[in-house]
Every structure is written in structure tokens, then in C-alpha cells.
Amino acid sequence: MIKEAEKLNPWFTEDQTHHALSSWSKELTHEQLSKWTDSYHYVDSDKKSVGVVMAGNIPLVGLHDLISVLLSGHNIIIRPSSDDHVLIRMVAAILSSLDNGYSERIRWADGKLKDFHAIIATGSNNTSRYFEHYFSKVPNVIRKNRNGIAILTGEEGENELSALGKDIFQYFGLGCRNVSKIYIPEDYDIDKFFGGIYSFNKIIEHNKYANNFDYYRSVFLLNADKILENGFLLLKESGDLASPMASLHYERYQA
Image 1 (cartoon, rainbow, N blue to C red):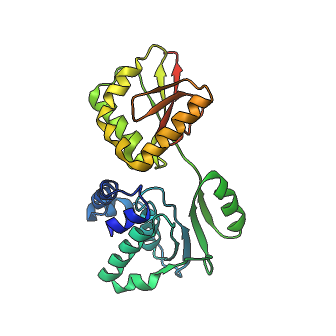
Image 2 (cartoon, one colour):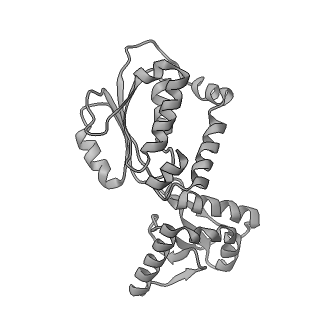
């Protein structure tokens, strides 16, 4: 299944999918699930059908919504992303094999969603406008683009910079929690940052990532943008929070 998922979506490498599965395995323990669910008060009510439009930017990104709906006692109608339908169907099949009741509570919508009482939809800022209009008559949770930032003081050690590198490069930067911009002191030495993230240099061996690196490097140069690079990451000074694939925005601040 993991190889099939990578064949469908080359961003879902075995390493990235294993990381997602490993992360979920730590969260789906009895202790962690109890800690999560004990903070809510559950009441008996008629089961509703919750439609979930899932994203496909990182492996199993829709799993949290699947678990949330099932734990709340409701049924789920899944509109999977074309980029991540293999893994989420695999998990649903495993759940159904453990408890036949889940097979009756999980439905799939490969086309238009219908017969739902509420909606959870994840997409871009553009698609969110469509979601907000189309699903306006039912209770809904609509998610838009999100970006992560990091503020450096200049006092960070190698371990902290390496951890920052993970926040930048995990899932090739496609996650909504990936860092897309850093704020650095006016006199910060960029070479220190480049040195701290050098262990992630093999990311450039991924064909699609390398293509993006070459493409945006060409675009920046054609636009006469001032960039810094280390062979696998492009740094561009910009006030924007979101940065293109294989690049990172930075902005200097006065300490």
C-alpha cells in the first residue's frame, strides 16, 4: 500500500509515509486517546452524517477528521483527495476489519457529496470560498491555507537549528505547519543557519523537489530577486509568509 501511495503521489515517499504512520502510532494509544476524549462531555443523540472533504498535501492528513467524527458517535462520508485516497482507504479498511460496525459508519463519495448534516472541508484560500458558499446552509468547519514561522535570536545551537530544519523540510514543506518563513536579527550570519540545516541536503535528490528548486531559482533570477542558496534551499528576503516549494522567506528585525 505504501508503494502504491507513492506511485500515485511521488511526494509520499516511503520515508515520509513511515514518519506519518509512526507519529500516529504514538497518538493512538489508549492513554493518549483517553486524555483527548476525557476533556469532552458526550450525550446520547441521533447519529448524524458528517461529510469530510479531505486534503492530500501530506500522508494521512485527513485521519484526524476521520477519527474525530467516529469518536463523536456520528457517521462519516469521506470525499478523499485524489492525492491521498490509497492510505486513508487502507486505514478505514483496517478499522472495519477490527470492528464490523465501522464499515456501516464509513461511506465514500467519489463524486458529489450528498445526504450530509454537517461538513468539515480542508483546502486552499481559493477553494475555501467555494466551500463557504456551497456548504453555507449546514454547520461547517472550513480550513484555509496556514503557514508556520520561526523567530531566531542568533543564540540557537546545532540541535535547535537541526530541529528547525525538520520543521522546514518534513513532508517537503507541504504541511500547513511547516515553517515557510524565518525572522532573523539584523546582524545574523546566514551561514550559521545553512550549517545547522545541512543534514537535510539529500532532499535535493528527490526529482520533484529538485525540479521545483531549479524552477524557482530561475524565476527569482529572471526577476532580479536577491537570493541566497546552499544547493538545496533558496532564501529570499520577503514580507510574505508563504514561500514557494524549495524556498524559504526571511526578514530581518531589530533586536
